[in-house]
Image 1 (cartoon, rainbow, N blue to C red):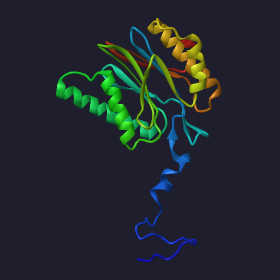
Image 2: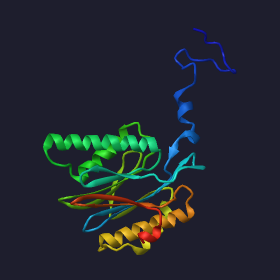
Image 3: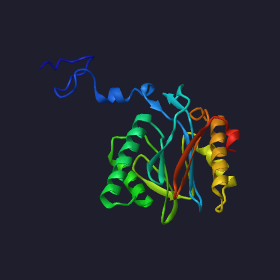
Image 4: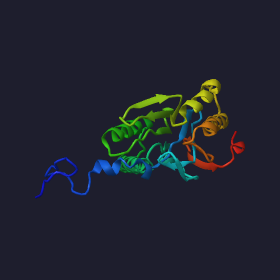
Amino acid sequence: MNNAPVGGEELSPYEPELGSFEDIEGDEDAVNKTGTTTVGIATDEGVVIATDMRASLGGRFVSNKDVQKVEQIHPTAALTLVGSVGGAQSFIRSIRAEASLYETRRDKPMKISALATLAGNLARGGPFMAIRPILGGVDEEGSHVYSLDPAGGVMKDDYTVTGSGMQLAYGVLEGNYEDDLSMEEASSLAARAVEAAVERDTGSGNGVYLATVTEDGIDIKGHKDFDDVR
């Protein structure tokens, strides 16, 4: 094997001759990202999750204007896509499969707290790129909203925001959240929080997806006009 110096550096005999994996993963402009603003609010009646609709390449080019960034992963739980689109989609497929396997084996759905722990463990130990989703669900113990970080941290709250527009959305929530919101009021508030982010955050835009989660199931609808859901 020829280990002659290339560009002044000696090649390791174990190094790939056509470039390293780090070089491929470092091409940020080629990776679809959600940028994103995602909001989750827990109420006595259920959970509302709102997300914008934009995906971008390298944060500079809008690659898709109608991305559904919230997906059902459990009979009464949904998860948002935040960060790398591929990583988030893979993460959702993994959690959905584990939750389905649990239900098949035990003939009952996972509790939302157990689902959140599973999600945190997968985020910490899996090959998922730069994800920071919101998990919202309902079980016999009530309504639950969790935010997850890329290191596997799981934090429960009455409401939470993740993504590049989080500071703008939090401003709306902090000034208007009340602990006795109805589902309709929570949906309006979540949509207004996303709208505030869309006005100033270049990674967020093009409308809002609203998911309502109750003990009866999940309903997800997209809206291009914020006037429809304010």
